[in-house]
Length: 195
Image (cartoon, rainbow, N blue to C red; front, side, top):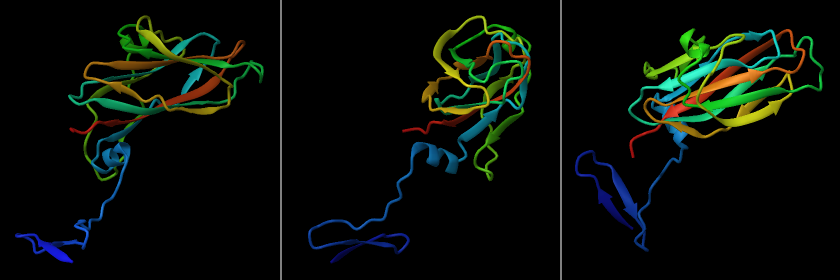
């Protein structure tokens, strides 16, 4: 077996009798790599209580990153609904590039906007808002809709990319007769590496 010597560090690589180079590699997903390099984030609205059956904008995120921001998943957590039937459903809407409505104009920062690498000091260059009962989203295109039972935790693996200046918003429309439902929306995302 032949040996290739590194001229600077003294490390070597072996070549077997069929001319194959012996190597050791580690395979990671892009998301795992982004977490290792401090480019992965968790953004969570914190508690939002919805007191009617009307649609309310509860989450808004826009990016100012020069690189693409990849949204891996959005988690919607809903407590039980007071006043509604256990068989009723909540309507969830995801909006592409909204620019208006009280969710945005009456801005309130999300409760949590954290790097998923505890040792990293990097901060996502973004704007992230938490909504409230009755907040509106008055433009943007609905790109995903779903019906979910109250008292659920649903992870949507939405696999979306936001380029610089793009935005996403989420609204919830609780079940008929709702008088109180505690909710949260969280996004798990990463900044894509240079390739």
